[in-house]
Amino acid sequence: MSLEFSSSDGSPEFERVIAALDDGACREIIAVLEEPMTVDDIAEAADRPLSTTYRKLDCLTEAGLVKEAAGVREGRHQKARYVANLERISIDLDDANELRVDIDRSTEHDFWSELNREF
Image (cartoon, rainbow, N blue to C red; front, top):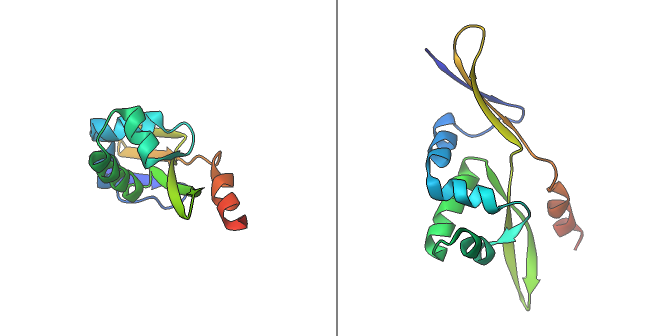
């Protein structure tokens, strides 16, 4: 049985996606990202240390499952916000009996990235 990875926008390697989905902390982070959040907010919501949260966000970003959205200005500093970048992931067998993984990307939070460019 061969593996085929497909999505509508040329997603990262299959192994990165599967590794991120196999990680319980990564799944918890995806679950709390219903809207753009700062790393501090994500760590608190997922009940994880900041160092772990940063590592898991790197893993999720490299896998294309989370993206950095517009930052929030706090004083002179701007804090990044992250948002889940998927609507649905499916793994199934196609007509040739090959395993296929599809990711439907979310466009719901694209306005956050556009908002950052305007300001």
